[in-house]
Image (cartoon, rainbow, N blue to C red):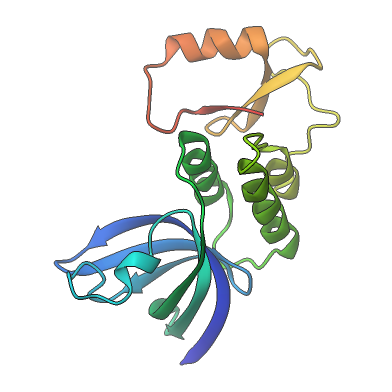
Length: 181
């Protein structure tokens, strides 16, 4: 059994059992993990308010037999909820590997969340940290260099006209496949 005290960003949560919650978070020490928070859905839970998406905080996490459990949490900062911010959390959850510490990605996430306050959130630092550099990228459909969208599903870049054609063919989703970079 190993205990970690680390900074975290809560990416997403899911119900697990009657009172438990599964929390997806990106940690400074462990990378992306999925941890169980016992009794976090109870009305008297001390953890409930600290385990919501877009919360930056400290967590005490125990690892036993390859499974993580959140023992304690403390909120340092609450990021304003917006569709762009929640989409960023979804992108990180979907594209990052489990349990792979990456200080560059941690710093890129913090920098991107700080630009959210000025209403100019950019996905470029996150994509570049994940290996999807935009410097030499070109549209997967027409090979133009003026890229504006990234497809999470296909892992390709698209220009504005091609991206709008693709977006028109898919119904609206809460977290769309195409993100504007």
